[in-house]
Image (cartoon, rainbow, N blue to C red; front, side):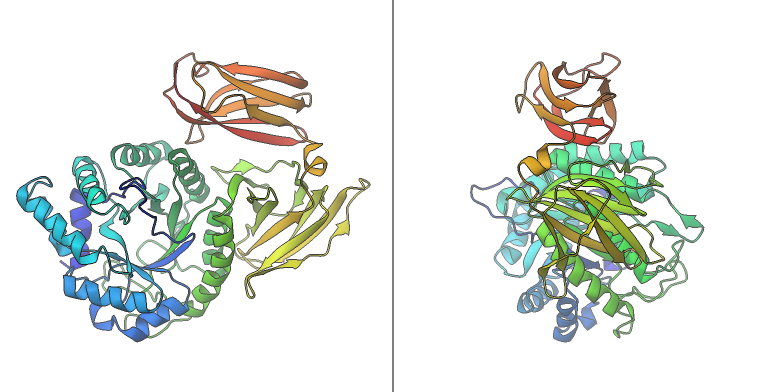
Length: 518
């Protein structure tokens, strides 16, 4: 059994937690705004300055352990030194963690071992956090104990694990139950899970359920989310094209994803069970054609992702045909219409300027998407090659004097980040419904304040997983609706974070509800 296999077995048995962002006062987060990483890193014999420089040149920020990782301090320190020299950081697996299969975390032996592990890595500039494997399952008791103990010793560095994504579960309900139980039991700083959409026998059809579920869970817990995407062909999963790889990353960006991992970076050892094909780096250490593809994608995703990480996510919607798990596109203040098969993520920066992440949802063919924009003075598009905003040409659209068309020609699965200028003030507030929460957080009755509703408006309340709890049909105009913390059935819901949404024929508005209970 390889060291990585032992690590996986250890995690499935006991470990796999993330640390809380809270710890010692003033402890700083070590996470970059947007993270790119590959699973797995070069083998021990190939962990050289040249191969680490190769990773950094491709745009990766984070190194994971190797397939044959020894977990020895001397090997980990060598990888940390090389990573730091090239501006990268490492998730470190330490073989001494295996002792907790036998020892209690709070025993004298356990405390001494944890002290030693923390001292060996905590102050190294290349250290990101403590790697404990991937795809853990309940029970979570030891995960909580170990995570708490490491957080107390080193609050600045997370303990990290990659969770099972939607594709590993028979239905969304069981997956969300698994994810919620993990987050309820283990203090977490970032939520990461994998999802591999493209199987030999066809697409799973659950990619958007995964993305929307990750978005909702992470938002409810106040943390960023990362996702690992499919790159290498292997057992049960077919070969992807560059457009299919870009499609995965682009749609995750539209949901505000803050980290992308590629499965895999270095090709694992050949075997008949997994039937690994060439990853970014072949098993012999040479570059496959994927290296140039990933380098270009990392540049583009890094430029967009780092900007989106500093913004407030508003919504993500899809035009027809709407994928399972996605919200249907509705026009609003920023976009009157969108022609083409697209995903659109709406974001607002600290100055109040709206931004759109537009995705060509066709992963196999280039498409021209046409956006009809309302009340927009000008539009700029981010050019990742120079990392700068470039003015875009707008054409008149229809009879309405304040509407203009923006046409985007996008390659298969490609995306564009655009900034809408001149939309603040009257230009953006004169159309569409409005929704606000009178008191945040609220206890007892929650007062939802509505304005400028058109006939046929619908007000809905959702939990953090996107399940609808209540719905109302408010009359046109302005008004208020009181929510008493119950479902449609009259059953009470627990205190937590909820989403209110109002829609009419002209668009929609959303507001976050933080309910403290009765």
